[in-house]
Length: 166
Image 1: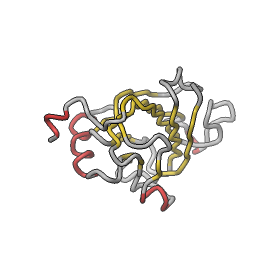
Image 2: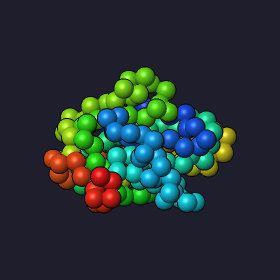
Image 3: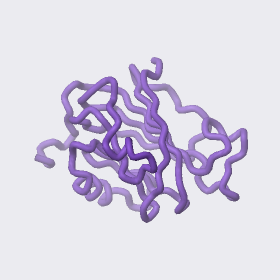
């Protein structure tokens, strides 16, 4: 189960939130669907997006990985993990909170459009002083970091409640 694609970028969360979503879909509708479920947790899902709640108001590192098959346990010691599915009909992901403009337009996934299993893990949340120790797992020397792992489960983009979102 090797990683077939990895892309890293930096986000500046707005109101301590950032979204990773399919740019061919309405980000606002995804955010609203996710916002209803985020509560006091760190992650929430929309049909085509994941919303993450950062602890710090500064920047956070994000790594998006695409796997051939469902990945094993994420490396390091994540502070929090959430698992769901994402429908990505455009076959790419975006984040308007990214500091890199290429991510605003959308980064193409080599596996294309479809429904993906998705797991997001948060690391180094609440590290004081702004830098994680060198033994902080997969993201040493950085403050908050997130890893979104995707694996294709269907060539058809769908969501478990598609009838409700039509």
